[in-house]
Length: 259
Image 1 (cartoon, helix red, strand yellow):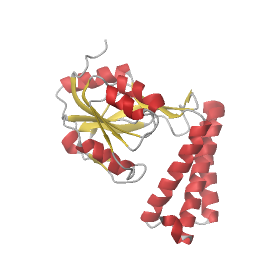
Image 2 (cartoon, rainbow, N blue to C red):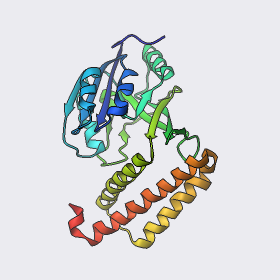
Image 3 (tube, helix red, strand yellow):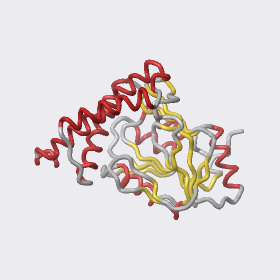
């Protein structure tokens, strides 16, 4: 049975940019939350109109990176519990019911993991290092925050976690156009993160890391069991890694590219 609207003491937080094609489904699935907060960084495709219709609060902000942006959304939350999801994710009915039962049990845990099932170009990926994929996204508001990393931010907290069983669905890549867009974006963000941590790269290291990424994904993590999409995913992982190290190389050799 669907949960009543605004029935659970949870703040759902999202950060968005040009996610109109998927945002409504994401927000529909969490209407049981007392608070839904969207922080948008300049969408031009109708995302903001959808957020106004389905969220309880939305704000527009510049883009400082994933970690800082998620902490901005977190700072607006007022409920005792927080669920952080992305616009390309949606909560299953089973997970919604499980969250409700968890809150009724007066839990002693401060953070919970959600099993995330991701898809690549329409296929659910059960290998390739993508499954199982427990992500820590449900937590007490006053007990955790996100790291300030530009990309691949982490939730910072202490203590044990509770593991939910209901799925968090994740449409990671809808099509090859999006694959190429994300490879470019994440490789740039990743290169800057590596540069800030003092790492350096060469053409040889870029090639080596790219080849290792393909081998790990397709063979060691059994991506071949995910069919043609498993091969495609291994290739895009390799490309993303290769270009991340190439961009890092140019950050070192070309001062103008650091801006």
